[in-house]
Length: 85
Image 1 (cartoon, one colour):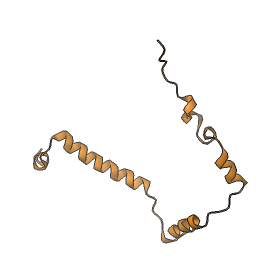
Image 2 (cartoon, rainbow, N blue to C red):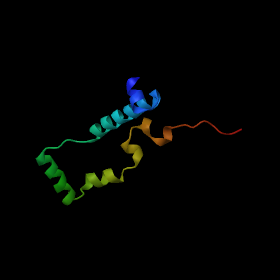
Image 3 (tube, helix red, strand yellow):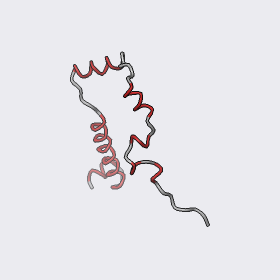
Image 4 (tube, rainbow, N blue to C red):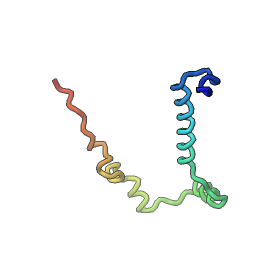
């Protein structure tokens, strides 16, 4: 309660502000991939000179989304409630 009074805000705003800050930090840490110096140089080299597409890469790029994602995640498996009257 004292911290809320010091910040001149209400309890809900105080809690949400700090929870959001903590959530952003967790997400940011999860989305970053720590690399060694060697790993970073390999990533940069791959971006500068990408590998030539082979048959397997081309087949993967041409594959429709339903073959990439498991069936339970495919858009066609989502049923919406009927809106007819």
